[in-house]
Amino acid sequence: MSGGGAAAESMRPSGRAEEFRPGVARRSPSARAEDAAKTLNIGEVLDRLRAEYPDITLSKIRYLESEGLVEPARTSSNYRKYSLDDVLRLRHVLHAQRERYLPLRVIKEELAALDRGDTALPRPGPRAVPDRPVGHGLDALIGAERVRLSRRELLAASGLDDDVLAELEGNGLVGPIAGGGYYDSDALLVARTVALLASHGVQVRHLRAARAAADREAGLIEAAVAPLRSGRLGESDGRAAQTVDELATLLVRMHAALLRTRLAASRSG
Image (cartoon, rainbow, N blue to C red; front, side, top):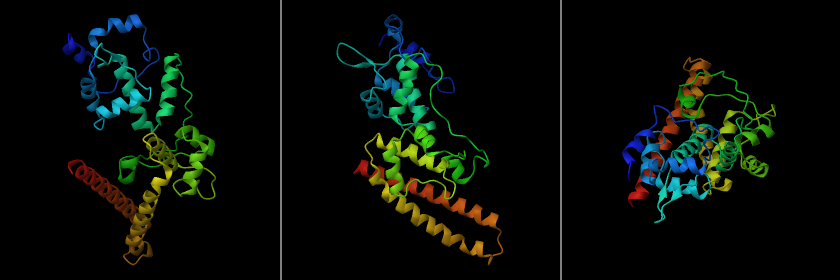
């Protein structure tokens, strides 16, 4: 590809992902023509994104195209040619999925708003209550931000429909805090994760096993720390809470390692 080396260098990220900004979503045909020498093929786009998003694959890029989130140009031979705009757009999608747990439907609405030149996106944010330190145990794995959300706020922040949230509640995957009538940060994380899973065809009924596994692991942890809480070992409540967090973190890590092992075995088999 003529000018490919210079183009690749000009599209290399400088320490962090370039922010997707209004006016970048859909550039004019003349501007796109001027950037024709800077286009990349899909493999080169994958190389650019992989440093920031190690899980990205060619199939994922094609899937995002099929969902209308990016529209690369095509050569006369029908090969995809990605512009700088397309790469920035893909980064926006991947960042929104990974950092904000947004479903593709909501991300697509954001991109449409940026295409229109909207500078303020209508994304209602949860009210954060930073009462836990970040970087320890489960907080380091799934985040420490604390929120209190009404049902309407949870639906808006997760992108779920009301009937899907009701199904989650019916299966014990999400529920309001007892006596509080509001939803916490874990409910938000589950709801956003379910929305992402749904974009890949995973239904709520498929997740019952995850709830059952969490119940069993919680029982295992409670049994392990019961002597601490009873005081037989002279440990404080603080030590018991710390042990709960340590055990939960170990179980989550073990589960992730086992899942990776199983997936590797299925690919090699």
